[in-house]
Image (cartoon, rainbow, N blue to C red; front, side, top):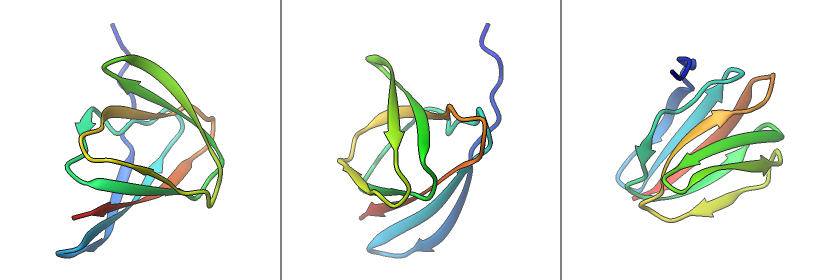
Length: 96
């Protein structure tokens, strides 16, 4: 039986007809929960550290660096988990 994880906390900063910008704050061990991205998106980490990504193909680790952005296309399905013993923060911009 899997232990219940705390939830990451999303704060929508911008939501208009062009973009959705969300700050995500992950306490240690927190997760987003399984979700599917409906839009292409860009993530800019505000913290350096490791995230675990659970996907239909298994689990991988992502090493992220503060200020170094990355892009993903729509349709990505995953659960994102903070693997650090400190808060992890990133800003996600979805492109409508």
